[in-house]
Image: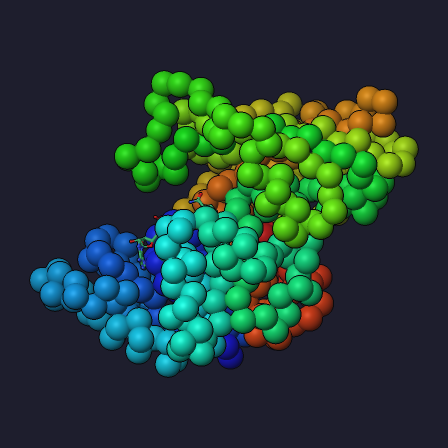
Amino acid sequence: MKAVGINGYGTIGKRVADAVSAQDDMKIVGVTKRTPNFEAKRAVELGYDIYMSAPDRENLFEEADIPVKGTINDLYDKVDVIVDCTPGGVGAKNMADYEKAGVKGIFQGGEKHDQIGRSFNSFSNFKESVGADFTRVVSCNTTGLCRTLNPIKELAGINKVRAVMVRRGADPGQVNKGPINSIVPNPPTVPSHHGPDVQTVMKGLKITTMAILVPTTLMHQHNLMVELDSSVSVDDVLDVLEKTPRVIPVEASSGLGSTAEIMEFAKDLGRPRGDLFEIAVWKESLNIVDNELFYMQAIHQESDVVPENVDAIRAMLEMETDPQKSIAKTNKNMGIIG
Ligand code: NAD
């Protein structure tokens, strides 16, 4: 049983903690908190030991009557790997501490590929992180792009991809972010960073991306145009997406015509926090014109990278070298459909 620590128990961290706990070959030894808020109280109720990433704030936890097991340095002694889920830009600064403590580290998409030196997506380049000391799970948008582009590439070959991302302005719990009444080209330059990020794991893929922010918190929405190398039918593409793990084709005609309805569907599945780990592709959007494939998909930004973090742990700790076996195990234990 491998021992895992979470540094940064926020949106991604608390989900990765639960996903690790659902596995039978790894366990959570502790999570770090800076603030004694409701998430800290809930972590204790769930049985997670709390360690201080900012030891000078320990008195705040005493005042809030939240038990603390030690500092992050104590946690390092007990784990095989730290999954760093701190806000973007913080993780890379922690890398030297992990190195000094002799623990492996997994970072998130808010860090820059060049700073970590390696990026990870279960379907694109699992083997590159086998035995590695550090890797970075690519962002929610990049994970969504990789999930559907990989099987399409295998089916028909890809000459070139263009994609337009409609991004949620903030996560549902973020009260200090927007926009609340505007459409914002973000970034206003082309290409956006998403295409180069895909290329860190799908090397050599020709892809250009553009992105805008809109006033919604629920999901990201992607519009893809993919020039194929060989001639295939829409049914061939649908068939391969139906068979691809962590991808679910959905029908607008059955009431799933929007991100709001897809999130409602995830709640009906009985998922913790109403998460949708899978990428939802609208069946009706699939079309091929002059050998160019068009489709639209929706990404639950708070949760799609979570199973990838579990697979990254298996790769780095050499618990599994076959991506398909790790993906199947993670999916079974998390109740992932598709
Ligand atoms: P978050 O703000 O929800 O959570 C971050 C947690 O880290 C909070 O609990 C915060 O208190 C804690 N923290 C802050 N500074 C710290 C420090 N110096 N040391 C230790 N802990 C600290 O952030 P998030 O949305 O979970 O994002 C985490 C990472 O995941 C980022 O790199 C982000 O880009 C990436 N990511 C986020 C999303 C998303 O939609 N939220 C999706 C995919 C990837």
